[in-house]
Length: 175
Ligand code: 2AM
Image (tube, rainbow, N blue to C red):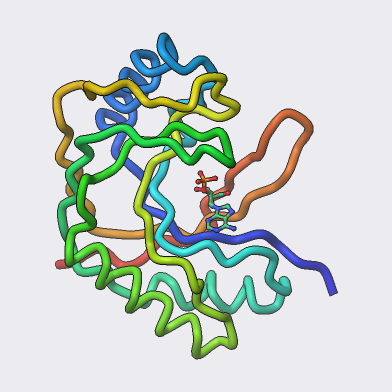
């Protein structure tokens, strides 16, 4: 049985992605590393890992029937994951609505036999990989307020030199 690597994410509108690319450029002066391509920037809500292609099809079919309660996430700080050598942008505190969206999503996914993570949810947008210097810049650019009203289901395909992301479904927007 073939598998496919899946995750649910918030995908920024182009203007937000462009602002985040500016954050990446500013941080890169300090930390080095490789910037993510602007059109691939996202905030992961749930990483499913490899799932059977039959289940992937089921999730792709069910996702447009799901609604995500709209909310806002402030992106107001840089952070690093030292072990993964990642520099990211994220909220200083996880908004309650975003935490709820994460928890609800995993509750639903557990009905498909998927196991929720044991690690706490750390919402972030990865901006740079392979950073050389693990101290993030102390000052972030002006905070961004990201309004979201849907999530996307993304297939991640490994290629030499990185991953290619393919949006396979999105939740039903409000209204
Ligand atoms: P990252 O940017 O912090 O690496 C596609 O790989 C997305 O899923 C990325 O946002 C990535 O987060 C996230 N991801 C990859 N592996 C993961 C894991 N084991 N646990 C949680 N998220 C993961």
